[in-house]
Every structure is written in C-alpha cells, then in structure tokens.
Length: 87
Image 1 (tube, one colour):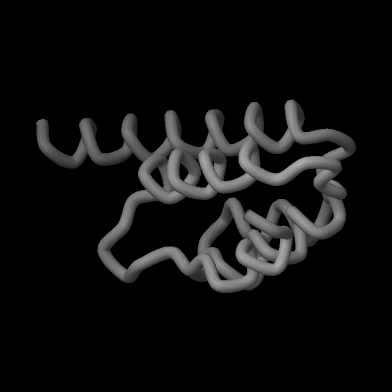
Image 2: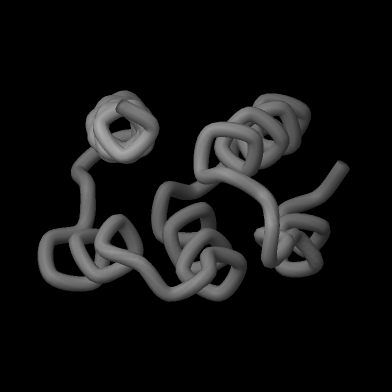
C-alpha cells in the first residue's frame, strides 16, 4: 500500500470514530516510511466534521502515538456521552 491510498479513505456517515481509526490505522501500518504530515492531511480529508477533526486542525499532533492517544480520548468521550444518553 502507498501513502496515496490513504487519500481514498473516508469515514462513512454511520461509522464511529473508533471503527474509522481502526481501519485507518491498519492502512497506515502497511506503508513504509510514512510521513506524519501525509497521515494528518489524509485523516483531515477523511474525517467527518466533529470535535476531533477540529482539534487536529487547531493543534496538529507531533507523532503518530500522540495522534492515536488523542483519538482514543475523543472515542472515550463519545462512548461516555452515548452511555449517559442511554441511561
């Protein structure tokens, strides 16, 4: 897989951030010498409008690990919000 293949990735309308990040992450590990700026650009194009995408625009992550950790935080917030709404 090449970094150009990331540009074709899109978050589906009904796809959760968690599922998208899992799918996107699997794609990124198949690409050797992947540049963080390419990943970030591709992700911003792929994500639907939400607070996570806004946060990436405001303060880009410094590493892939930071990107994953920030995504994990937003996923946890969404899951907690969904849980609260169900109660």
